[in-house]
Image: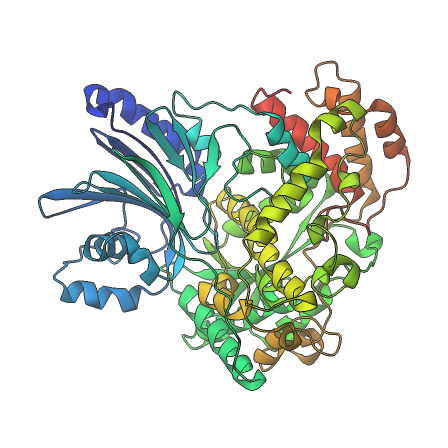
Amino acid sequence: MCGVAGFSDFQDNYLTDAEKWNRILVNMRTSIAHRGHDQTGEYLRSNVGFSHTRLSIRDIQGGRQPMVRKAHGAEYAIVYNGEIYNLDELKPALMHAGYEFETFTDTEVILYAYMEYGIDFVKKINGIFAIAIWDGEQERLVLYRDRAGVKPLFYSMEGSTFVFGSEIKALFQYPTVHPRVNMDSFREIFGIGPARTSGCGIFCGIREMKPGYLATFSREGFQEYPYWTLQAEEHRDSYQKTVDTVSYLVRDSVRRQMVSDVPVCSFLSGGIDSSIVTALASDYLKGQGKQFNTFSFDFIENDQYFQSNSFQPERDRPYVDRMLQAYPLNHTYLECNDTQLVNTLFEAVHAKDLPGMTDVDGSLLYFCRLVKEHNKVTLTGECADEIFGGYPWFYRDELLNADGFPWSKDLSARTVLLNDTFIKRLNINDYVRERYQESLDMVPRLDGENGEEKRRREVGYLNLRWFMQTLLDRMDRTSMYSGLEARVPFADHRIIEYLYNVPWSMKYQNGMEKTLLRDACKDLLPHDLLHRKKSPYPKTYSPNYEHMLAAQLSGLLNKPDARIAPLLDPHKTELFLTSPKDYGKPWFGQLMAAPQMMAYLIQIEYWMEMYDLSI
């Protein structure tokens, strides 16, 4: 895993002032150096510049980037962030075609595959990636983002110049790219956030490559289009055949993602998703005579203050302990206190360049930093709920049939502290409705689907394209901010493609979500863990954390130069701060309730101040 950045312009010659442009490339990769401190490099030619900061995972010595190769009298260069998991299938054919490998990295395989197969080579690879290739023969820059959107890639077009980077902050190191916002930026933040409309970078002029897209920039201009899209197909497999297929795909994905030249660990929450990944990884290493490192997360005093609700019915710790009885794991329990949690709210804004999932982001960032002290690579159980139907909005009628994004049903909760003038200017109801309808219009369907069948298809697609992207965005920024590579076996595109067309009756049976996944992996988990109800990522229930947030938000009301003050209604806010907070009615997903609204506003203030933004 790494950080990539660069620029291209066909109306300029960067070599006329190479020292200046090399310095800019260094600044770009320095701004994202947290993504990998092991090696760095730059590549500068007349019309293109690349920079790279590396977290060394495979071929520690030989995998330096930018990587340059020559053929047909032309030069090809690559910078790349990610991992390719079908390396062994790709390499023999390239060797047979005459390519001589100088390293053992997947980077060299990607570059040679492009040189051999052309721009559509990406359809052959299985992995997570953000790739930039300079094609000296065609004189073009080519960019790719993985199918699931695990790895980020942002870009900006300023005049004749194209600028790109793994994170937004890298783009701001280019002389003509500056942080600016408009009302649509705030419509995203207050109406959609902490999600983002696909392709939207919030800042004016900043875009993000969409998952499954490739783009080219040449003398003819900029073009982007999808190389991969979901297809609706009739599912003809029997239930047993479906179980067998899922069993194979999950096992094969975990096996492939164990490939590394440094030790791999896992986040073990005690839920079935992370437990399945952990069980398979532990068995894989056990076959090599090795013990698997695992880490679980919780908050100090949650044993005292935890409040069961319909979204989070029970604590995870007992189920982590069950896995420790079942598998020979080297486990570490990690905890975060209230002060540490508040502090991470600000670090999380730096990591993401935007306000986000508040303490849900911040706590994961804190835990990733602790995990990095032991391992450089971790496996996670992320994405299984979106793919197998684990969230309550897949099966609770009032959420399933909500007229809008089901994880953000009540838009009024998002503006409850804003002043009426700003609410009117935002007009988030119309903005969100447009984004929602645009997504519905893109849903791949079968002819004749209607009623509940049609709605199931819609909710499945919305989860893949919206909610899953938010969690993958969170996972990448929090892990990579700590120099930790997080892999996501359930996001293998083969699993996504297959499960998209499996009927709901196979995914949900006898009142139990994710029945299909449970049946496919029933030999891996203790019985009580296998059949536990879903419980999301842990959060704190400490009243002290809430009091600390209230004090911070109250302070902003009395701060004359607070950026967010013109947006807030003082009377509404004071009333909110002194009233009891509801932990059981989230306004985004399952975790963001009243305390997280306070934290979100605090993050927005910090973000506006950090980038000198105003309405």
